[in-house]
Each structure stands twice: as structure tokens, then as C-alpha cells.
Amino acid sequence: TMSTLNVDNINEYTTNGKVNVGHDIKLASGKSVLNSDGKSTGALVLLSTQTASDDTAIIFDNFVDLTKYSHYKIVFDRLKPSTDNVEFRFKFRSGGASGANLTGTYNQGGDYVYVDHSNGYGTFGNNSKTDYQVYDNNVGSSTGEAVMGEATLFPATGDTNKNVTAMTHYNMKQRSDDTMRYIHRATFLENTAAVTGFNFYASSGNVASGTIRIYGVSI
Figure 1 (tube, one colour):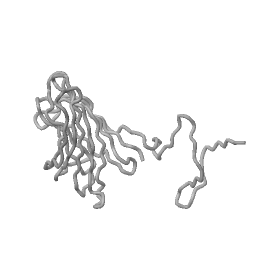
Figure 2 (cartoon, helix red, strand yellow):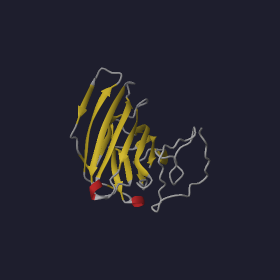
Figure 3 (tube, rainbow, N blue to C red):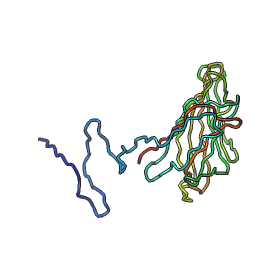
């Protein structure tokens, strides 16, 4: 026979504060394991949202806390520049609440495909930029044009053994002729400074509209 044990709190633990369990733990339907902040382990926690309104840049500072989040998701929702045919660019930042852009060599490679167009596909690598990198290029400002996608960010910690900030990012770009291009890029920056922020901007003009959301992935 099987018995059910209901426990409100577990007060038995080892000297280092850990609970040792020798068997599987089965959760009731709809339940999850919570961290110290009451969030589900592995859950996405919305940390910050900004909506562009003809801004010179969209800057997020001081959102990184690696004691709570293992890495971060950045969602780019239908972003449009004020000037036609520009690059959307980004920089990593350090310094917490009083953040500053990180300089150095931003390396990138990737691949792309035209989803509903005969232009085909391609790959690229060893594409380095000084002090910034490209989120997408040839971004239009006409009606119907927009960029949407997602990035996964693993920030450098300030430890010399963990001095690489890595970000994989993909997006779909709706073009003025209503065709779609999908592109996937991988970017990294080697810098011993801890990354604490993110800067998104256009190579010319402003970010006219669209929303960026940053989520932490709970430990």
C-alpha cells in the first residue's frame, strides 16, 4: 500500500543547510519547485520593458543578477527605425545603474534564409566590429517593415575565467515587398568587466517604434 504524507515545512537539514532526499519527488499537477524569491526554478521572470518612441537608443542598465538568474532572454517586438535602410546595432554595458558601453572587438557569425523569396540563403563568419555589433542590417522604415526576434544572453561575470559575453540572436525581418528574411547570429565579446546592461540603437536616426523586453531565467 502507499501512504500520503502532507508536510507544510521541512525543518530537517544538514549543517550546510541542504535537505538530502534519497528518492524522486513528485509534484502535484500544476505545482513547481520555487526558488528563494518564490519564482519557479527555470521560469522566465520579466525584468524590464521599454517601448520606443523615436528614441536615440533603448538602454537597459543594472538588470543582471547571476545569483538569481542563470542567463537572460531579450525579446525584440516589431522594431522600426526612423530612417530607411539602416543597421540596428547593440552594445553590452557595465557599471550597474550608472552603466557605460563596453568597448572592444565584438565578433559575429551566422546564417540566413529568405523564407518566401527566391534569393536563397547564405552563411558568414569572422565578422568583427569595433565597439559594437549588428542586430540586423538594411532595416527599412516603410509601412509594413519591421524586425522581430529573440536573443539569449550569457553575460561575463567580472571573473577572469568567465570573461566572455556570449549572445545568440535570431530575427525575422518583414520587408517592404512583404517578403520575410530569417537570420541567426552569434556574437561574443571578451572583456573582464562584468556585463550589467544592454544598449540598442540605429546606425542613423532613431528607433521609431517597437518594444524590447528582458527576462531573467531563474536558477
